[in-house]
Image (cartoon, rainbow, N blue to C red):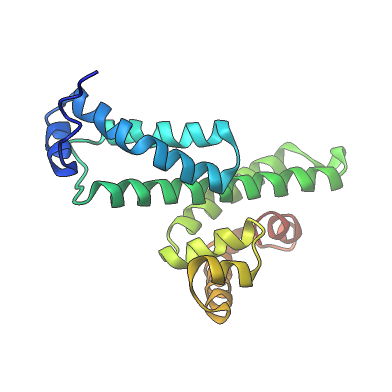
Length: 195
């Protein structure tokens, strides 16, 4: 099957995409889907979650095609997928911590008030996490995903001392941003979930 846009450059495809070209979008999808899928699958090891992230990424590209200021399509896609993977890893870690916590908390103590407090704390945590500096957030999320400081340093090509500093900075900023949730009544459960 002949695809007339196959030989088009990324910048030509982006121009056509901004003019609402379905064919340009399909070519971008064909060109980058496999690479992005492999990258996400390698990080998450979950086929359904990988498909969801990739489809969400392309859906967002289509929806924001008129607003997006994209200079370099591969870099834009890689950066977008990187943030989506970090968010997924962080969300999975928090969810697992909550499930682990539920095992240790007797049901009569798991009141509606505690669930509301947890939901609010999770929202504030995610808001504060997103305003961390990019490298600091990346290191922190990887540390909460179970990687050691040495593994993070090797993965990101930075020193272990830098990893340690980023984690300490992230904890300091997150605790500061969540001060209202770190009262004596909520300190232990909240720290267990997030820190």
